[in-house]
Amino acid sequence: MSRPTKYPRAQRDWALRTYRDTRDQYRSRMQCCAAIATALGAHVNTVLRWASEEFGPSRTLSAEELPSYVHTLQSEITRLRQANCALSEQVRARR
Image 1 (spheres, rainbow, N blue to C red):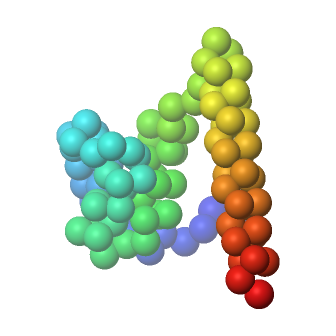
Image 2: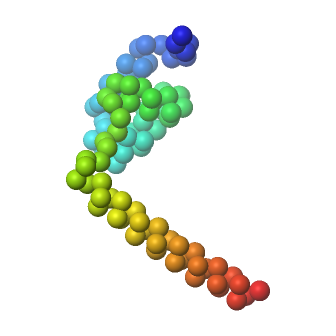
């Protein structure tokens, strides 16, 4: 059973046309959909769902890019953990 539609088909079509025409003006799918949602008076998740249904998921990493991306994330986690330890020590020293 499909969910009831809150927005007329014409509004969805407008949102998808606008997305297609303006996506390159934004840094991310989220920013583009947020602007469209604001103009439409809809929740951003609604517009994101429409964009995903129409254009597929947002870009995914290729098999070649994945190891480098994982390494970058692991480095960031290490950096954040070190910063957290340093801040925790400063807090303990002030008590």
